[in-house]
Length: 351
Image (cartoon, rainbow, N blue to C red; front, top):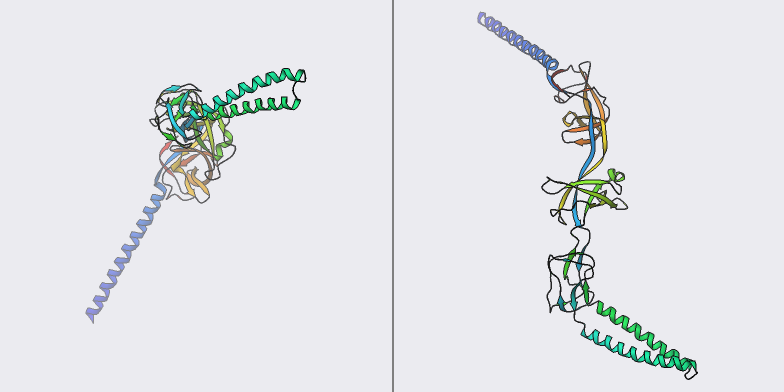
């Protein structure tokens, strides 16, 4: 019996010691948590006005001001080729000639008929004055002259269709045919383009479409991104594309360079104005929420959650258009553990 009492007392002592230890541990944990809540240090950022250049960068491509696939209008056999690859030609230069001997023979026949009819018409003009010929015969001869003239004009048009001439001053591309080849109206003979006059096509998001006007200056860089080129907007489409919600813009490049090759990719920079009093904050200071954006503002050394509206983004910073004022201090770290009204302790404060 005595042994049982001793055992019970020992168990009670052990339980008492255990609960005392647990209580002390919880108390220490609470004190530690409270201490951390108060003394956990965060990084702060002071909102100050700064210069903001409103600009966007979009992708574009270069294109020759004039670029045409040379094709003949009628089928035939090539008898002459004047397509010097990579050479500059003037407008109207004969580039390709098709066989037209049959058409030339018909033209010569019509010209002979016209000469005879003109002599007849000249004699009848004298006879009609003395009533030596009827008015009907005279008019029939005149009709014959006019008909042959019309036939000659038609034949000349057919002969012109056997010739391919340069539609504008430009440089010939790669030739795809040779003398003796039989070609159709769909055969690609070569290409011609104006290299010293280049246009730049690019697309602007719908929200900026009203800012783009004719005469606007834009800059762009090529793949290496080292040199800045200039261009002037000359035209825009009449409406927004239904699929992409973008506006197509065309600009004319003002400073030609051999590096500017039609078809090349370009980064186009558009500037829409400057704001010398823009409020820019670090992007990591924003807490994204559904349909809203929030930042933590320090007021009387306590955390307060404030909804904001943002504007233009610049690398690691973003413009705040509503919700903050110059001189406000916001938190840029520790956003996950800070609660409304929590006491703040700063490790760094930047501007």
